[in-house]
Length: 448
Image (cartoon, rainbow, N blue to C red):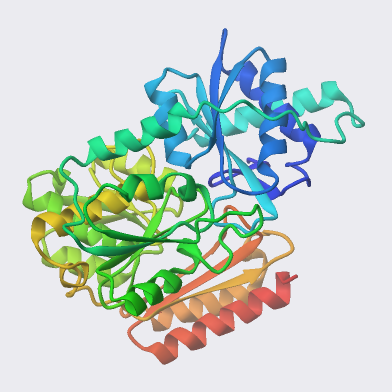
């Protein structure tokens, strides 16, 4: 079982294991060792204040392992996947903790093919990291490197150009849109990307200071961009997470539009053009039953994968699906990109609106979601819930009552010390009652 890698790379409080300087250096060296002869690595980061020292320390480790390192500076996670693939790098690395608060950071790794590493590869890398740590000794590298990496600014422009070419003829049609950059990596890309699309663009939360990433803005707070759309009378809103690998939206009425609705819009468009392979979409266990019902009305099958975009992609490869994603806004278009890309998703949704002549609200008007609640419980450790009879008893009772009219999904977060309790039900009263009971039991047994 992996100890360092979660569902999306290594993630922790910056400066604390496994993101202390000693371990970060070891990760770089171990990665270089795993890449074969004369490896080349491209690196990018989001806007956290810990990003530069982690990137510099990781680069030191990579070089110590024999790798050549290039930096794209502050740039989105999917941009690194694109650059790694296009320029024949052995790997791409992103220093980011995505939607987490500024104190956290992380290391995401892509292979030279632009895909995230498989679990088995990450497990093997953990063994190599432990080996390097043992060789270093316990007292080595108390401080991270402060040597700034030279940045190849051309990479960012190249990524913007690729996005525009990926959706030819894209236009705002003189609409006004609001873009929330989450004070994250999108701040360095989105303003330039949308500037020439023939419309009015209001960019918000694009002034990162190292500590304001995701702070009451971005995809963690989609109600913020929705409120701005309503206040300004705009046609649409886009909002990204810290590293911009996912996007959420607001329609013309100022309603939040999540990843489920985005999948519905894109699936129907692909189906109408004969591009929805097998008339199948891969979602996750968190997607609403209302989405499943809407797909069924359109003759589209919905498969469910575990939470995590790389697990969605694995299921897509098995089933041959051409579209997949998560309610949280990671949407996968394998014909376009190897990973979720919030900016690409925004352009593709905008393109459907452009070609259909309809508003986003009109395109999703028939999506009726079951009431759903997700409660996050902070936990001190992630012990199997089967060890706690009181918790299991309450889960069983909820499943029995909601057997034909709802769903119960209880899981640990792969990136944070949280248990997530998701209940979906036709009855809002039953949904709330079961969610609060299960959350309370988990808190009593495992809460911080």
